[in-house]
Length: 212
Image 1 (tube, rainbow, N blue to C red):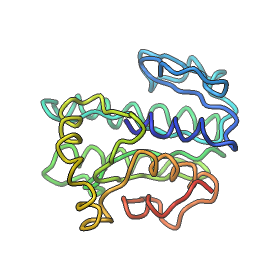
Image 2 (image 1 turned 135 degrees about the vertical axis):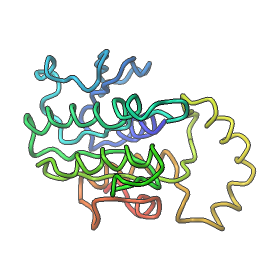
Image 3 (image 1 turned 60 degrees about the horizontal axis):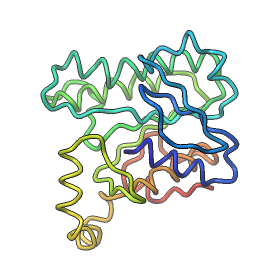
Image 4 (image 1 turned 60 degrees about the vertical axis):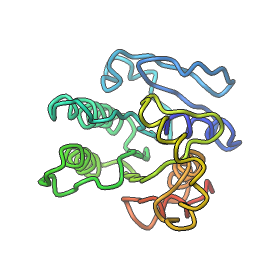
């Protein structure tokens, strides 16, 4: 869902010259600026190094729900794929900006009781240590999908439908905890172009960053 949101903003932004979308499946979109790279393992970029050169930023949006998953399986998807991909990219492009989509409540101490939060924290810590030009972690809370974008997780889509009538009131009551797929995408472009005062951005920070 977040990936489709930032893809939309990149394709609409006249300052973005080209987009390489890496995933287990194609985006299903056709655009002059877009190229799909389908990989069985999106973390293994070693064999496609020649295809991932020349880019200023990586927006890492891959994620799954932890429901029903063991910590080992969740770690393989949430931490290991991101870190392996980032390690290849930083070797090829140390001047790149890397943006990792985490989540509100991630545990940077790596010692909390909540499994998904520990794993997210481990991923964040590992990525923040890499010698890119800059690394930013996005920790959005509630993300409102816009422009026909939907989540691959059915439970989330049901939640979005049920909460839609309440969103105006929720935004008024909790403005610092709600963002949109559009704002997240525009903020990703913004931190690449002009940075941010913090490395870890929560929803209120994301909402303040424009595309530049």
